[in-house]
Image (cartoon, rainbow over all chains, first blue to last red; front, side):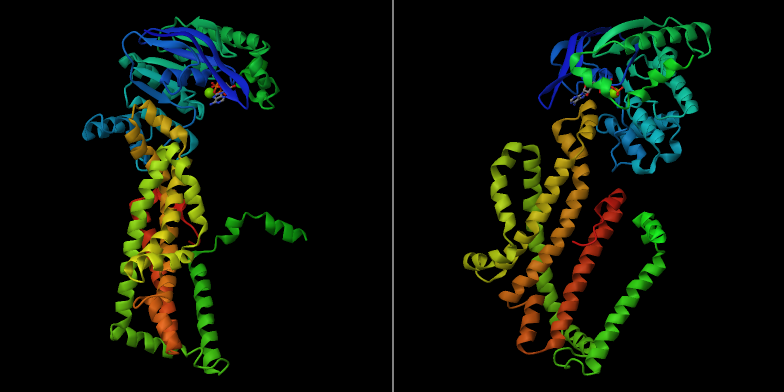
Length: 268
Length: 275
Ligand SMILES: Nc1ncnc2c1ncn2[C@@H]1O[C@H](COP(=O)(O)OP(=O)(O)OP(=O)(O)O)[C@@H](O)[C@H]1O
Ligand SMILES: [Mg+2]
């Protein structure tokens, strides 16, 4: 069990305090698939960074009942090493840990999975945005981690590729049962993938919705559509809520109208 | 007016995208024109043949210097010095840059001194070096080290400082220890800057060396030039200048080829017009 207790993270930006995460309590059972949704800037990436151990919490703690899990992380940006080919990037985390032949085999399998086998010798600056993000995904999957953290991994992909990779991710999860925390802005994606959808706002968890539907799931399934609608209502309900005072400036964000939630709200 | 404005709207790289052949043709034309101007000025008596010998005289002198081994000997001396000085500068500058990269305390302690030294042109240090090291090899090599050190050091330091912390995080998530983070992420990320520093240093070192050989030396290309000047052999001086320029070009070309071979991804990132 992975438990977050009173987890908080503050940043000081130009002598102003920004509360990125405020008192998050969350228990992630082993092998669970949690999807985090919430408005831009609500602290989702911060939560993942804390889980990945990349930054220390200002308050609270993360406890692991079975020792520190191995972590695979798909960042919000591809973060590829420009000096390595696709193969080198995907195998990056395995070098020095497993035998070379095994690295080669696992990398090939991961590349086939994300549909980039033909680009194994390409360098990152020769890839499109969506290809680069798939390389980032393969780099995390190839580690076969116990804890898999994904920050909007499919945001840069077309609907078709995205649907395919959602299926692959579900299969991998069913086969190996890592604990998954998945951040997305796409509510349909959330209900397709999750055991539980966690709704964040202003650095807090303000809602949780279990998704007790069998897999494989169909986006047009009635129950699924109803759940999706309910989550969209949750999100639009929180849209007018004032977040932490320190986050005030978000409401003056001129790009806020691009928030996908707001767009989805206006469609009937 | 309108046409002019339109032309300015075209991104400069499109204007510069002349096919390779045409670009080389342009360079060839300039070279031929310069040679022709030289020949005309000299043969036409515009400049006395003493000050500017005919191209063919210079060619003949060059051939003579090559066949009697004089040129080869001077070139060997100069190259030997540059190899020693450059190698020493690399051996000093790279580890120091890495030390400063990982230890901000060391950096803060040494930075003022290094900043001060950086302002002093290497040739200005020559009198001191002559007093300390005499006029032998040590002094020449010292000058080269001084000239090469800062480009290499600053290139490496800048490269390390500019390494994207987001890439380092990728390594941290994989559980890499500090040593591997440096070796597998920081070093390769800094490589373009390091390589640029190495390239600039090679040019600077070469120039400083020839300068040092001009002032106090008994061998080397710089010495060959001043010696010829004292004998009023303008042709030898010109041969020397050609050789110095050509060797500089060759060295730079060699470094670039090496980069292209060993690190193709570095190519666009390390192209500089002039060192
Ligand atoms: N390194 C940092 N320094 C200062 N403030 C930060 C830092 N990282 C995040 N923040 C702040 O913390 C808040 C939450 O950021 P976070 O990246 O977690 O949002 P998010 O939910 O992932 O948003 P998005 O959906 O846009 O990716 C924001 O207000 C942000 O400005
Ligand atoms: Mg984010």
